[in-house]
Image 1 (spheres, helix red, strand yellow):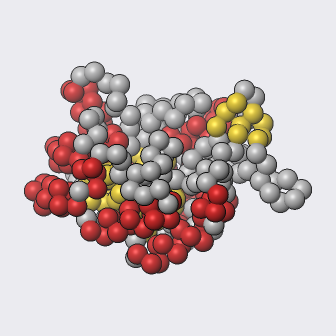
Image 2: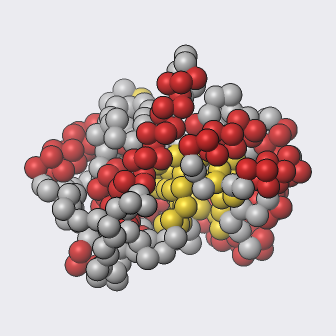
Length: 327
């Protein structure tokens, strides 16, 4: 979590500790048997598996539906971008009907390189995205926290997100991000924080790659936000300073352990694969990455159809939460 100054305002920079934190977390999981290899847990509630358009190259709506259908995903998440088809309701609904796949979520254009997509006013941008989500029957909008320089939007973000959600009836799930680096310091460019745990959001998205870059203990964090967690971006990271978005299992985050924890404690929500395939040359390699990702999710969420199912735990048993390895 971000440190506070004596005036209670969050300081702009802190010591760069992400890499050492990441190493310490990995050592903890290497030395503690957290994953239950002799058990098969499956949530009593539905968990849908989706494919993000950011995992598909080219990042087109049609290719996203095509790949999701080919590999057995339940639905898709569309990132709204400069590409007009990402907000073409008729196109999206037509492809949904054609493939039988649901539009599980939209990702709002809140990224640094999408400042004027949909609208120059940040609140109108969120309202438009939420209404687009309703038009394509998506229940969730994923969004990033603001940057410090975004004025009143940043200062009123927590309450404003809640207001837009209530106004539109769409869940606005704020995503965990990470501090930026400048030499030996971490620069806190997001406001009120890159870490949504610090704020009073109703709904949250957890991204494993962002957690890796931030040096966050993924399992401990997911346990802490369990009741507010609506959405998971399934990916991985190696603990480097880059936002890698590796195929789950290819990094060193406790992704399998965290998915099993969700299944064991009867979580309900959407798990969306968000891996980086932009620099993969062969289509066959890209498709293998998407196939491996959904297979990983099914295995560790207990969703393999031929596996015996057992779940004797409820998430209300807080004594079952994972031990902290420090943060």
